[in-house]
Picture 1: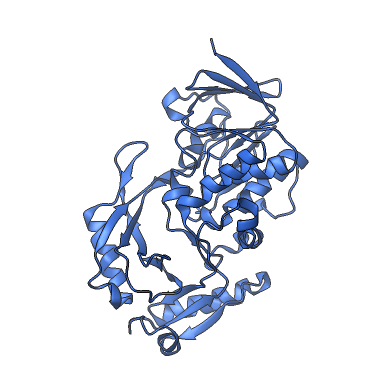
Picture 2: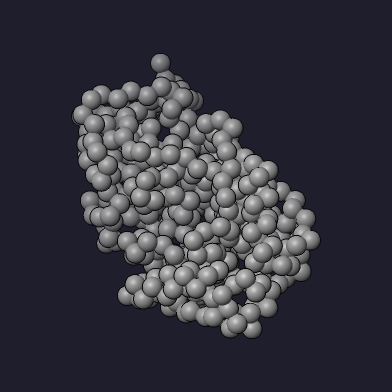
Length: 384
Protein backbone atom coordinates (compact mmCIF):
# COMPACT_ATOMS: atom_id res chain seq x y z
CA UNK A 1 0.00 0.00 0.00
CA UNK A 2 1.32 3.42 -0.88
CA UNK A 3 2.28 5.97 1.73
CA UNK A 4 0.48 8.79 -0.02
CA UNK A 5 -1.54 9.77 -3.05
CA UNK A 6 -0.91 13.12 -4.67
CA UNK A 7 -3.18 14.77 -7.20
CA UNK A 8 -2.41 17.41 -9.78
CA UNK A 9 -3.64 18.82 -13.08
CA UNK A 10 -0.67 17.51 -15.08
CA UNK A 11 1.89 14.79 -14.35
CA UNK A 12 5.18 14.81 -16.26
CA UNK A 13 7.50 11.84 -16.67
CA UNK A 14 11.06 12.98 -17.39
CA UNK A 15 13.15 15.87 -16.10
CA UNK A 16 15.15 16.83 -19.16
CA UNK A 17 14.90 20.17 -20.90
CA UNK A 18 11.49 19.34 -22.41
CA UNK A 19 9.89 18.13 -19.18
CA UNK A 20 11.27 20.91 -17.00
CA UNK A 21 10.38 23.67 -19.46
CA UNK A 22 6.89 22.19 -19.78
CA UNK A 23 6.54 22.26 -15.99
CA UNK A 24 7.44 25.94 -15.91
CA UNK A 25 5.12 26.79 -18.80
CA UNK A 26 2.24 24.91 -17.16
CA UNK A 27 2.67 26.81 -13.92
CA UNK A 28 2.58 30.07 -15.84
CA UNK A 29 -0.75 28.84 -17.24
CA UNK A 30 -2.04 28.19 -13.73
CA UNK A 31 -1.91 24.39 -13.71
CA UNK A 32 -0.74 22.27 -10.79
CA UNK A 33 2.20 20.09 -11.85
CA UNK A 34 4.13 17.10 -10.53
CA UNK A 35 7.27 16.09 -12.45
CA UNK A 36 8.88 12.70 -11.85
CA UNK A 37 12.55 12.15 -12.68
CA UNK A 38 14.32 8.84 -12.11
CA UNK A 39 17.70 10.53 -11.56
CA UNK A 40 18.39 14.27 -11.39
CA UNK A 41 16.90 16.84 -13.71
CA UNK A 42 19.14 17.24 -16.74
CA UNK A 43 21.34 14.28 -15.84
CA UNK A 44 20.69 12.35 -19.05
CA UNK A 45 20.84 13.53 -22.69
CA UNK A 46 19.76 17.09 -21.83
CA UNK A 47 22.84 17.49 -19.66
CA UNK A 48 25.53 15.54 -21.51
CA UNK A 49 25.09 16.89 -25.03
CA UNK A 50 27.32 19.31 -26.90
CA UNK A 51 25.34 22.39 -25.89
CA UNK A 52 24.69 23.69 -29.39
CA UNK A 53 21.82 26.16 -29.62
CA UNK A 54 21.43 26.14 -33.38
CA UNK A 55 18.64 26.50 -35.89
CA UNK A 56 20.86 26.04 -38.94
CA UNK A 57 20.81 22.55 -40.39
CA UNK A 58 17.46 21.51 -38.96
CA UNK A 59 14.78 19.97 -41.13
CA UNK A 60 12.40 22.58 -42.49
CA UNK A 61 9.48 21.22 -40.45
CA UNK A 62 11.46 21.88 -37.25
CA UNK A 63 12.19 25.51 -38.05
CA UNK A 64 8.92 26.96 -36.66
CA UNK A 65 9.76 25.28 -33.35
CA UNK A 66 13.35 26.46 -33.62
CA UNK A 67 12.27 30.05 -34.19
CA UNK A 68 9.93 29.91 -31.21
CA UNK A 69 12.76 28.50 -29.12
CA UNK A 70 15.12 31.20 -30.41
CA UNK A 71 12.91 33.83 -28.80
CA UNK A 72 12.87 31.90 -25.50
CA UNK A 73 16.66 31.55 -25.42
CA UNK A 74 16.99 35.30 -25.97
CA UNK A 75 15.16 35.92 -22.69
CA UNK A 76 16.66 32.97 -20.80
CA UNK A 77 18.22 35.07 -18.06
CA UNK A 78 14.93 36.82 -17.28
CA UNK A 79 13.03 33.55 -17.44
CA UNK A 80 15.34 31.45 -15.28
CA UNK A 81 17.42 33.95 -13.33
CA UNK A 82 20.55 32.69 -15.10
CA UNK A 83 21.87 32.87 -18.64
CA UNK A 84 23.36 29.34 -18.25
CA UNK A 85 26.41 30.49 -20.25
CA UNK A 86 24.19 31.02 -23.29
CA UNK A 87 25.82 33.12 -25.97
CA UNK A 88 24.88 33.93 -29.55
CA UNK A 89 28.34 33.22 -30.82
CA UNK A 90 27.24 32.32 -34.34
CA UNK A 91 27.10 28.83 -35.81
CA UNK A 92 29.36 28.09 -38.76
CA UNK A 93 28.63 25.00 -40.81
CA UNK A 94 31.72 24.01 -42.75
CA UNK A 95 31.89 22.50 -46.22
CA UNK A 96 34.81 20.16 -46.93
CA UNK A 97 33.97 19.77 -50.61
CA UNK A 98 32.25 21.66 -53.40
CA UNK A 99 29.34 19.23 -53.15
CA UNK A 100 28.95 20.04 -49.46
CA UNK A 101 29.05 23.75 -50.24
CA UNK A 102 26.33 23.27 -52.86
CA UNK A 103 24.20 21.52 -50.24
CA UNK A 104 24.61 24.45 -47.89
CA UNK A 105 23.53 26.86 -50.62
CA UNK A 106 20.41 24.78 -51.31
CA UNK A 107 19.55 24.73 -47.61
CA UNK A 108 19.98 28.49 -47.37
CA UNK A 109 17.51 28.97 -50.23
CA UNK A 110 14.95 26.56 -48.81
CA UNK A 111 15.15 28.01 -45.30
CA UNK A 112 14.89 31.67 -46.31
CA UNK A 113 11.16 31.95 -45.45
CA UNK A 114 12.04 31.22 -41.82
CA UNK A 115 14.40 34.16 -41.45
CA UNK A 116 17.58 32.46 -40.27
CA UNK A 117 19.74 35.05 -42.00
CA UNK A 118 22.24 32.55 -43.35
CA UNK A 119 25.30 33.79 -45.23
CA UNK A 120 27.50 31.69 -47.51
CA UNK A 121 31.26 32.25 -47.61
CA UNK A 122 34.12 30.75 -49.56
CA UNK A 123 37.00 29.03 -47.79
CA UNK A 124 39.27 31.99 -48.54
CA UNK A 125 36.79 34.42 -47.01
CA UNK A 126 36.35 32.26 -43.92
CA UNK A 127 40.08 32.02 -43.32
CA UNK A 128 40.31 35.82 -43.55
CA UNK A 129 37.68 36.09 -40.80
CA UNK A 130 38.80 33.03 -38.85
CA UNK A 131 42.48 32.29 -39.51
CA UNK A 132 42.36 29.28 -37.19
CA UNK A 133 40.45 27.29 -39.85
CA UNK A 134 42.52 24.89 -41.96
CA UNK A 135 42.94 24.79 -45.74
CA UNK A 136 40.63 21.76 -45.72
CA UNK A 137 37.67 24.16 -45.46
CA UNK A 138 36.30 25.05 -48.91
CA UNK A 139 33.41 27.19 -47.68
CA UNK A 140 30.66 27.45 -45.12
CA UNK A 141 27.32 28.82 -44.00
CA UNK A 142 27.11 31.20 -41.06
CA UNK A 143 24.03 31.70 -38.88
CA UNK A 144 25.15 34.70 -36.86
CA UNK A 145 22.49 34.50 -34.12
CA UNK A 146 22.87 30.80 -33.33
CA UNK A 147 25.15 29.87 -30.47
CA UNK A 148 25.70 27.58 -27.51
CA UNK A 149 25.05 27.17 -23.78
CA UNK A 150 26.18 24.95 -20.93
CA UNK A 151 23.86 21.90 -20.97
CA UNK A 152 24.78 21.00 -17.41
CA UNK A 153 23.11 24.21 -16.23
CA UNK A 154 20.02 24.64 -18.39
CA UNK A 155 17.65 21.84 -17.34
CA UNK A 156 18.37 22.27 -13.62
CA UNK A 157 17.71 25.99 -14.06
CA UNK A 158 14.34 25.27 -15.70
CA UNK A 159 13.57 22.84 -12.87
CA UNK A 160 14.45 25.44 -10.21
CA UNK A 161 12.35 28.08 -11.94
CA UNK A 162 9.42 25.64 -12.12
CA UNK A 163 9.78 24.88 -8.40
CA UNK A 164 9.82 28.60 -7.56
CA UNK A 165 6.69 28.96 -9.70
CA UNK A 166 4.94 26.26 -7.66
CA UNK A 167 5.63 22.99 -9.48
CA UNK A 168 6.46 19.88 -7.48
CA UNK A 169 9.52 18.08 -8.82
CA UNK A 170 10.43 14.65 -7.48
CA UNK A 171 13.97 13.61 -8.34
CA UNK A 172 15.39 10.13 -7.77
CA UNK A 173 11.83 8.91 -8.19
CA UNK A 174 11.27 6.16 -10.73
CA UNK A 175 7.87 5.44 -12.22
CA UNK A 176 7.26 1.71 -11.87
CA UNK A 177 3.66 1.50 -13.03
CA UNK A 178 1.31 3.64 -15.13
CA UNK A 179 -2.38 3.08 -15.83
CA UNK A 180 -5.35 5.04 -17.09
CA UNK A 181 -8.93 4.54 -16.01
CA UNK A 182 -11.98 6.75 -16.41
CA UNK A 183 -9.87 9.62 -17.71
CA UNK A 184 -7.40 9.55 -14.83
CA UNK A 185 -3.74 8.56 -15.02
CA UNK A 186 -2.30 6.78 -12.01
CA UNK A 187 1.48 6.59 -11.58
CA UNK A 188 3.08 4.46 -8.90
CA UNK A 189 6.65 5.38 -7.97
CA UNK A 190 9.70 3.74 -6.49
CA UNK A 191 9.27 5.97 -3.43
CA UNK A 192 5.92 4.31 -2.72
CA UNK A 193 3.82 7.27 -3.77
CA UNK A 194 0.88 7.41 -6.15
CA UNK A 195 0.32 10.35 -8.48
CA UNK A 196 -3.10 10.95 -10.03
CA UNK A 197 -3.70 13.38 -12.88
CA UNK A 198 -6.09 13.75 -15.83
CA UNK A 199 -3.19 14.74 -18.10
CA UNK A 200 0.17 13.03 -18.58
CA UNK A 201 3.20 14.35 -20.49
CA UNK A 202 5.62 11.69 -21.71
CA UNK A 203 8.98 13.48 -21.77
CA UNK A 204 11.11 10.49 -20.79
CA UNK A 205 13.79 10.85 -23.46
CA UNK A 206 15.38 7.67 -24.72
CA UNK A 207 13.09 5.68 -22.42
CA UNK A 208 9.85 7.33 -23.56
CA UNK A 209 9.00 4.44 -25.86
CA UNK A 210 8.27 2.30 -22.80
CA UNK A 211 5.67 4.81 -21.65
CA UNK A 212 4.15 4.95 -25.14
CA UNK A 213 3.96 1.16 -25.27
CA UNK A 214 1.88 1.15 -22.10
CA UNK A 215 -0.83 2.82 -24.15
CA UNK A 216 -0.49 0.69 -27.30
CA UNK A 217 1.67 3.22 -29.13
CA UNK A 218 4.95 1.44 -29.83
CA UNK A 219 7.54 3.37 -31.79
CA UNK A 220 10.72 2.07 -33.47
CA UNK A 221 13.04 4.14 -31.31
CA UNK A 222 16.65 3.12 -30.81
CA UNK A 223 19.36 4.51 -28.58
CA UNK A 224 22.58 6.15 -29.71
CA UNK A 225 25.48 7.41 -27.65
CA UNK A 226 27.46 10.55 -28.56
CA UNK A 227 31.21 10.72 -28.14
CA UNK A 228 32.16 13.90 -26.33
CA UNK A 229 35.50 15.30 -25.17
CA UNK A 230 36.82 18.48 -23.63
CA UNK A 231 40.36 19.87 -23.76
CA UNK A 232 42.40 21.64 -21.17
CA UNK A 233 41.82 25.42 -21.06
CA UNK A 234 43.43 27.11 -24.07
CA UNK A 235 43.94 30.74 -25.08
CA UNK A 236 40.77 32.05 -26.72
CA UNK A 237 40.82 31.53 -30.47
CA UNK A 238 37.47 30.13 -31.58
CA UNK A 239 34.52 32.45 -31.20
CA UNK A 240 32.01 30.32 -33.10
CA UNK A 241 30.12 27.11 -32.59
CA UNK A 242 31.32 24.89 -35.40
CA UNK A 243 29.57 22.13 -37.34
CA UNK A 244 30.32 20.20 -40.51
CA UNK A 245 28.03 19.55 -43.46
CA UNK A 246 27.43 15.84 -43.65
CA UNK A 247 28.44 15.34 -40.02
CA UNK A 248 31.75 14.31 -38.55
CA UNK A 249 32.53 16.70 -35.73
CA UNK A 250 31.26 19.74 -33.90
CA UNK A 251 33.30 22.05 -31.71
CA UNK A 252 33.10 25.18 -29.58
CA UNK A 253 35.28 26.95 -27.04
CA UNK A 254 33.80 27.54 -23.60
CA UNK A 255 34.21 30.71 -21.56
CA UNK A 256 37.01 29.16 -19.53
CA UNK A 257 38.99 28.31 -22.68
CA UNK A 258 38.22 24.58 -22.82
CA UNK A 259 37.30 23.30 -26.28
CA UNK A 260 34.27 21.01 -26.33
CA UNK A 261 34.32 18.62 -29.28
CA UNK A 262 32.13 15.74 -30.33
CA UNK A 263 31.15 13.36 -33.08
CA UNK A 264 31.07 9.63 -33.81
CA UNK A 265 29.34 7.17 -31.46
CA UNK A 266 30.01 5.57 -28.11
CA UNK A 267 28.45 2.40 -26.74
CA UNK A 268 26.07 1.37 -23.96
CA UNK A 269 27.38 -0.18 -20.77
CA UNK A 270 23.85 -0.99 -19.65
CA UNK A 271 20.35 0.52 -19.82
CA UNK A 272 21.44 3.72 -18.13
CA UNK A 273 25.15 4.19 -18.79
CA UNK A 274 27.28 4.73 -21.90
CA UNK A 275 30.84 5.67 -22.72
CA UNK A 276 32.88 6.58 -25.81
CA UNK A 277 35.16 3.93 -27.26
CA UNK A 278 38.88 4.57 -27.69
CA UNK A 279 38.45 4.28 -31.47
CA UNK A 280 35.63 6.84 -31.47
CA UNK A 281 37.68 9.31 -29.45
CA UNK A 282 40.65 8.90 -31.78
CA UNK A 283 38.40 9.50 -34.79
CA UNK A 284 36.91 12.66 -33.26
CA UNK A 285 40.34 14.02 -32.39
CA UNK A 286 41.73 13.30 -35.86
CA UNK A 287 38.79 15.03 -37.54
CA UNK A 288 39.04 17.99 -35.16
CA UNK A 289 42.74 18.57 -35.80
CA UNK A 290 42.14 18.32 -39.54
CA UNK A 291 39.86 21.37 -39.39
CA UNK A 292 41.29 23.11 -36.33
CA UNK A 293 45.10 22.80 -36.34
CA UNK A 294 45.39 24.63 -33.02
CA UNK A 295 44.02 21.55 -31.29
CA UNK A 296 46.99 19.45 -32.44
CA UNK A 297 48.83 19.60 -29.12
CA UNK A 298 45.84 20.11 -26.81
CA UNK A 299 45.37 17.69 -23.94
CA UNK A 300 42.01 15.99 -23.48
CA UNK A 301 41.01 16.14 -19.82
CA UNK A 302 37.65 14.36 -19.95
CA UNK A 303 35.51 12.24 -22.26
CA UNK A 304 31.92 11.16 -21.79
CA UNK A 305 28.80 9.87 -23.49
CA UNK A 306 25.07 9.58 -22.83
CA UNK A 307 21.93 7.98 -24.21
CA UNK A 308 19.76 9.65 -26.87
CA UNK A 309 16.60 8.42 -28.57
CA UNK A 310 16.43 8.18 -32.37
CA UNK A 311 13.43 7.45 -34.60
CA UNK A 312 13.89 6.23 -38.20
CA UNK A 313 13.17 9.62 -39.79
CA UNK A 314 15.25 11.51 -37.17
CA UNK A 315 12.19 13.60 -36.32
CA UNK A 316 10.70 13.73 -32.81
CA UNK A 317 7.28 12.70 -31.62
CA UNK A 318 5.44 15.76 -30.35
CA UNK A 319 1.71 15.88 -29.76
CA UNK A 320 -1.32 14.01 -28.49
CA UNK A 321 -1.64 10.27 -28.14
CA UNK A 322 -3.77 8.57 -30.77
CA UNK A 323 -5.07 6.01 -28.27
CA UNK A 324 -5.47 7.77 -24.94
CA UNK A 325 -7.06 11.19 -24.35
CA UNK A 326 -5.02 13.35 -22.02
CA UNK A 327 -1.68 11.78 -22.96
CA UNK A 328 0.85 13.94 -24.81
CA UNK A 329 4.28 12.94 -26.07
CA UNK A 330 7.52 14.89 -26.48
CA UNK A 331 10.51 12.64 -27.22
CA UNK A 332 12.86 11.22 -29.86
CA UNK A 333 14.93 14.30 -30.67
CA UNK A 334 17.81 12.40 -32.27
CA UNK A 335 20.49 14.31 -30.40
CA UNK A 336 19.12 17.69 -31.52
CA UNK A 337 16.56 18.54 -28.86
CA UNK A 338 18.57 21.03 -26.80
CA UNK A 339 17.78 24.14 -28.84
CA UNK A 340 14.10 23.38 -29.50
CA UNK A 341 13.47 21.88 -26.04
CA UNK A 342 12.05 25.03 -24.40
CA UNK A 343 9.65 25.54 -27.32
CA UNK A 344 8.51 21.91 -27.15
CA UNK A 345 7.83 22.41 -23.44
CA UNK A 346 5.63 25.41 -24.20
CA UNK A 347 3.84 23.53 -26.99
CA UNK A 348 3.06 20.61 -24.67
CA UNK A 349 1.77 23.04 -22.05
CA UNK A 350 -0.53 24.63 -24.64
CA UNK A 351 -1.81 21.24 -25.78
CA UNK A 352 -2.42 20.17 -22.19
CA UNK A 353 -4.38 23.30 -21.28
CA UNK A 354 -5.87 24.60 -24.52
CA UNK A 355 -6.01 21.47 -26.66
CA UNK A 356 -4.11 23.28 -29.42
CA UNK A 357 -0.87 25.08 -30.09
CA UNK A 358 0.12 28.08 -32.16
CA UNK A 359 3.20 26.27 -33.53
CA UNK A 360 2.90 23.77 -36.43
CA UNK A 361 3.63 20.23 -35.21
CA UNK A 362 1.73 18.05 -37.69
CA UNK A 363 4.94 16.45 -38.97
CA UNK A 364 5.73 15.09 -35.51
CA UNK A 365 2.59 13.04 -34.86
CA UNK A 366 3.01 9.59 -33.36
CA UNK A 367 0.42 8.48 -35.92
CA UNK A 368 3.16 8.22 -38.54
CA UNK A 369 4.11 4.89 -36.94
CA UNK A 370 1.90 1.78 -37.20
CA UNK A 371 -0.45 1.18 -34.30
CA UNK A 372 -0.77 -2.04 -32.30
CA UNK A 373 -4.13 -3.18 -31.04
CA UNK A 374 -2.98 -5.96 -28.73
CA UNK A 375 -2.30 -5.33 -25.05
CA UNK A 376 1.32 -4.56 -24.24
CA UNK A 377 2.90 -4.93 -20.82
CA UNK A 378 6.18 -3.66 -19.50
CA UNK A 379 8.25 -4.65 -16.54
CA UNK A 380 9.00 -2.20 -13.72
CA UNK A 381 12.57 -1.83 -14.93
CA UNK A 382 11.37 -0.58 -18.31
CA UNK A 383 9.89 2.66 -17.06
CA UNK A 384 11.97 5.78 -16.50
